[in-house]
Image 1 (cartoon, rainbow, N blue to C red):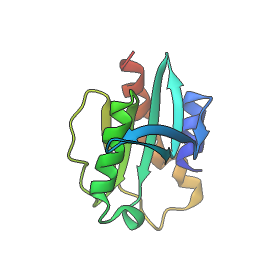
Image 2 (image 1 turned 30 degrees about the vertical axis):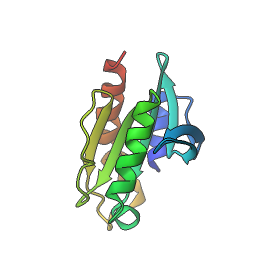
Image 3 (image 1 turned 90 degrees about the horizontal axis):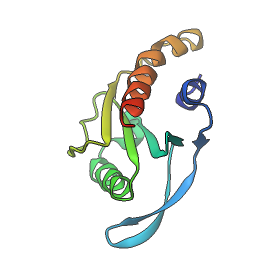
Length: 128
């Protein structure tokens, strides 16, 4: 089970890999999102930052997060340990640490993702 499938079970109509236009560093840019959705009229983005691909990209992740927040999105960043949190505090930003055990069998992935999905879902619902 993927993060997308786990969130779709909880939140319903979501888009995976959607592209949105936002202003980033003063210019209109197209950005790909891991998960895009709307809850009670609030647009939100969920980004999963795996340690392998996001190692050393904290500045990029910070700029993307700031651009999404400036455009009115609520943002959930799921950061795989040991990645540091994005150095930004905002009422519409939730950062969740996640440890992904490489030896995890597929049958246990849903249970492992459940607390992360629950935390993010509850936070999104409280925004409204």
